[in-house]
Length: 294
Image 1 (cartoon, rainbow, N blue to C red):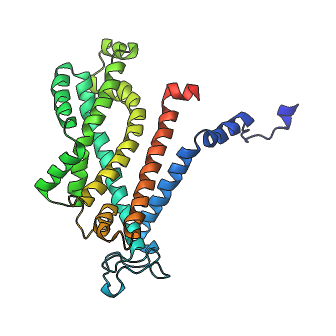
Image 2 (spheres, rainbow, N blue to C red):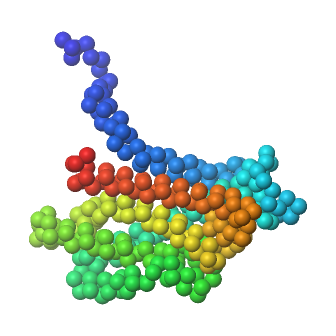
Image 3 (cartoon, one colour):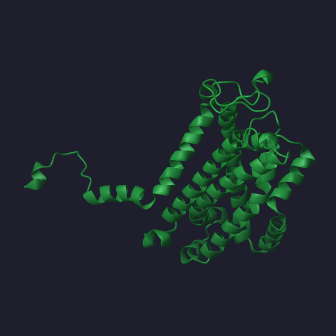
């Protein structure tokens, strides 16, 4: 009788499904908060020309080191530039570097890792090269690469990508080594399936979940490395407003106006923390073992 009274064409959502959706936020509130912070930062970076009240490159020596006011919300720096505008535009540089390095590292590392993990004779050669790159500290390798080609945003992205590729290669290789011994892969080989098709159908889908998690950590690490390079004078050019450049230029005036260093530092720390927390949440959701425990 109850089935007859049910209107046709309307989907019924079980209470269990609603509890499951609400439980996602209850189990991982930090991951949701991290995603919200990243969205806010991304929107601020995209709308920087509309949000920033003053041109971040405009110099005004008569207003240097002014305290916060209605015109300059975070005050001005040693050149009279608006600190708030520079912090907002600095989000663009950090997010561009983080996303670009993560995408390039995953794309290059995925291709190399698939080849090294499935082709036996190539594995030894590739992994020795990757071990050699990982033996060099990432910041030192990035400084050397930037010094050879000159400081620019593109150079910084390439210089940070190179040290991150070996980590992705090792991750993909470990997944390939475990998947290629599975019965369904052996069955595909037995029926004469070509190697590229095996990699795309069977190996690649198993590599995507850990790669998504690894990409978030690479993004956070890239933003921190870019700030370190800029702080040391080996990153983006001084005319580009970035959080690292702001902290480097304002460190001499820290006793007088600590906000010049603290505000971009807080923005950088908050963004990196949000990306790492989001990565932890994605790991908990995508890892089958952790998902069963939850």
